[in-house]
Length: 168
Image: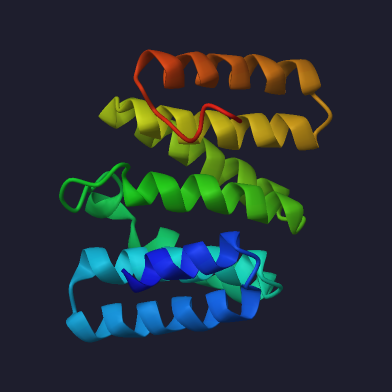
């Protein structure tokens, strides 16, 4: 719940409060020793750090999370989650890495996210991979390719009732 509050604070423009809440969420998750909570806490904190003016800290946290979600954990669901944490960590990180000038690693994470999405064949994960791929095309100036990927993602969202991402 604390991580959700951190996201709510961030979307409400309360960046400092968001950072504080995300740090507390990650701390509480660590205390549980429960890996899915720890992963979600680190994912939330890394994203919020990046988005709230601490991009280097956020990126290091997300890279560490991608490393943690390697091997047999690459495609692990950790229960009934909306997406695979290994895909979420890779696709979100690819956007940030590209913005920070780490193009090669951004492309690698994007490709790994796509590969994992195809491996597990789950629609939400496909959409995350599509968004990551489209973002890299867009940032490269390949607007037609970005648009084609996003159009396919929007159709997938509509077909499979994936709400919230269809406005991309």
